[in-house]
Amino acid sequence: MKRLASLLGIAHGTVGLRAQRQTVSLIESAPKAVRHSGSLARRRRRRFCSAALVASCLGLGLAPVRAQGEGLSIDLRSGRKLVAQRLVGDQASGYVAKVGGQAVRFSHADLVAIQQGAAAAPELLRFELVGGERVFGAIVGGDADGDEVRVLSPVLGELGVPLDRLAAAVHPGVHSGDQVVPEGVDEALFLETPRGYDLVAGTLFRFGADGLEFQADGDAEARWYAPRKFSALRLRGGVDREVVAGFTLLTRSADRLGVTLDGCNEQGVQVTLEGGASALVAWRDVGCLVVERDVRHLSTMQPSEVVERGFDGPAVLRWQRDQSVAGGELGARRRAYGRGLGVHSKSRLTYVVPDGATHFRAAVAFDDVVSALPLRAHAVARVARNREVLFLAEDLRPGAPIRDVGLHPVEPGDTITLEVEFGEGRDLGDRVDWLLPLFLMRRGA
Image (tube, rainbow, N blue to C red):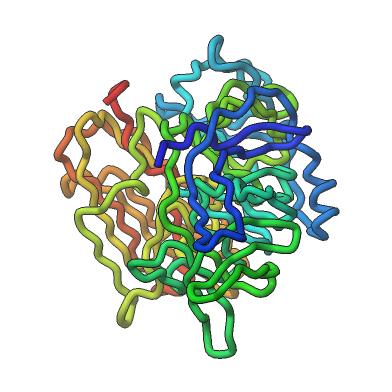
């Protein structure tokens, strides 16, 4: 299987994902659909279609969103944090942020993250791509050769997901651990039953306006399954992106895509997608942008030690990567954070500092969902390097300002420990987010 040359391409005024695939004939004696790589997308420049229009088409009520003028939260490698009313600039010349009437300049290389607004997954199918990227939307079509599925997204508009990159199409409320594809099965449908799920192994042929065409093992021919007829489609053998993206874009409808950040203007952020296509994403549709190069996010690392327990027994909820401990998007003070760790008291996560790391940085806060709980949650958070306390927050409460851990020098082989301890309310509602915990790496390390 060749590496995928193109993930996203722009066509007909929308975002598109494009790949080629072998033609499948349903009249062959032994039909077989083969997922494989495709060619580069054509470079075009378009703006994403109106989120309001697409939401109307889908019958969705999207939450109110910020305009750029209401403030952007910006994290820099220097450890400085900015709350800006305006941000303009590009990768070549750097950026100018308007902060309290003053112009603050910084380079593209100093940018760690931009937080614009909250992010929440809609009640739509979740299309999971190999490598962790995803798009939410409704199936609106496909192509005759089975190259892609056409998806209507409330933020991104109509786009095509190449089947070479597709790992799963999953309905809301279904989690990966609920449905496991056994060894020896490459393509499977999960059909909901009164007692759970039935696994149907077989061959995926194509998507269309009616859903998907799938041939179960042992059946003489394929049949169409409407989206409401299956719980999930899961596939093996997909391909990851060839080059690590410079940034991760998290939209306000929880789409997660790897992009190159080219620049920012009054309208939004200009990004280049994996296939080379350029797109302007309106500020109202941006949850956050997080750097991926010259850093190591703790959420991509395996902790050397994990300690979790409840106040009176086992842990209430287990720690999570890049999502809250309850499974939603990481969110604090009505802003999304695309990278981080969701934990519950009591938790202690220890990480070994990797080679090439120079500094550690993070922030911590209660997750926004706790504010809706009928509880007065309270916790204590601390960070230690080799058992030396670097940061201590003894009065962590829901809705309180986000606490900055600071920027701390580290040496390879050191240990960094993130701990959330019981507060005044025992462990009730102690859903805490470690926001953007990462190691700054030497350039090219």
